[in-house]
Length: 283
Image (cartoon, rainbow, N blue to C red; front, side, top):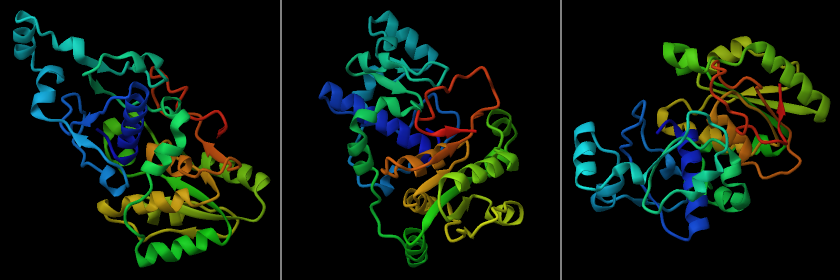
């Protein structure tokens, strides 16, 4: 459920659980707890997954209220096999103690679930297809300098009222502080801006240094190309977005500088304290 970044968190946590328990996992593309239908996006990566069968789901998948009563009456309580993430997004180590055969529903947005298999996750999230000609040209520019990715997330964070209320957007003050911080830590930074509203970014975001605005990946099926380019930058300024979180995390360089917003959500009721890795700078 959710976009590409959310799906990556879900896969990474499931892979970590699978390896720890030495049992396979399967995916279901019709989570009844889903808040919005989104397309499956993980097929852009070199990873293998099984799709859950009807038989596998018959006991574990959450049922309608009527079906749940029927199952409980017959002694097959589906709650026994349902493991849902708590409301808060912080790391929940009891995740690794769920029952075999459980139907797992949640976001699992913390590297603590999979940090001990980081190399495996990065290998699974290697991109399947070669970059397009335009992306290859950008990749060449990025690798030739001290590239710093800047991700500006707007899209539904601006246009959809309930999404805006929950997430909000990082303001220009945050980006200016982050640019200043990076400029004090990185010699001759060259900024590469990525956004789902690149024209707004061109008009509003100024860095005071050499800056490029990546504008070749504008279709829904090409967004992952931005993630590949971001991950090849040496340093990162991310938005309050799981998409740019992964763009920074996929960079394996231990010396990278990553700046993330201290305020991830508008709601203070949801705890996200384990979402930002300890080595990243929060502003």
